Picture 1 (cartoon, rainbow, N blue to C red):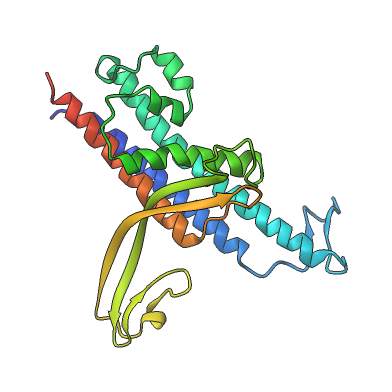
Picture 2 (picture 1 turned 90 degrees about the vertical axis):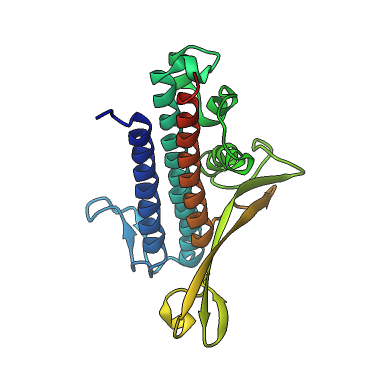
Length: 245
């Protein structure tokens, strides 16, 4: 039985994307909990914030903002790397088919956005390609600039944009059609659910210069689903080229 190389690469990418989303969800859930009375690394190194500190509320808010940026930035970096690794595997295996225009070793050293620019034969939907291009830009802002949008970011009309596919869940309840968004989760919000539907539509998050990049759990969930669609679309493109003479 022939080994499905494309399928194996796709499966690894999808598994990694799911793992990253789970770790991110774990981190955000921890961030939302009530903070401990004291923050310190351990009992010997007494560097921390005590409940007697007059600036404690402001410091805790700063810590929450920085932590969320750190969690989200690392998650987006991991997702970007999962797709980049997927492209590396295909190019290394069949460089003549993908025609990346540079040597395999040089291709592997490039970031995701530059890899995409070297793959004119990659056939995926334009909106998915836009997500792959934007994820690196948003990740760079979160990791290198603490999520504060500035002149070093890739700006359009003074804004940093993040294009993706928004997945919205609606349920039909005795109270009518209800969207299960960040503010309405779980059976209690929908009452006696009778049926549901999933809607997918283009979405854009836009962050003006000077603002902080912030992704709500619902936004990030949709980004993760979009990245999984990207992985599947790339695999589909790889299979399409393999069928050509």
